View 1 (cartoon, rainbow, N blue to C red):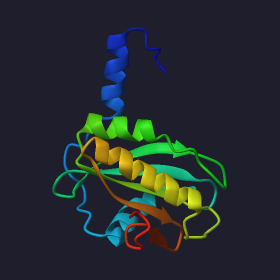
View 2 (cartoon, helix red, strand yellow):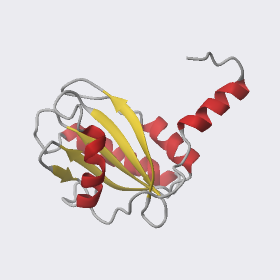
View 3 (tube, rainbow, N blue to C red):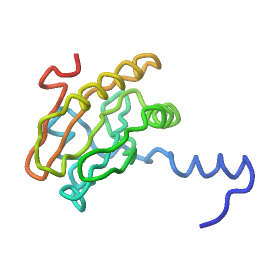
Length: 152
């Protein structure tokens, strides 16, 4: 990997890491469509360890990017709220969907899952980005905090 030597090199690298996709790839119309869209991004490790991904959407609810936000252990993952917000601002998305897996196969959110999602929602509101949903996926199923009113 090439070493980043100057501020300009750093900015160039950021542009590469956070570039929007050229063409919207999928329209998200429900929690089910979001879960079906994102599951392939998790399939190689869904039962192994937790990962957090963020789906970035434009005003038409088309996917413009998927951000790999964090990777953790078999039972938890530290979610970098600041990094999620910075990437959403940089990509200029109007809404996001937070998604993480539970390797245990339990689809139900923990208290910390709910607290984190509410904290992210409040932070998003401060910068005019909408957190549409926070979804937990497993190999067979998913749980939408929005559908179950856990984000209110």
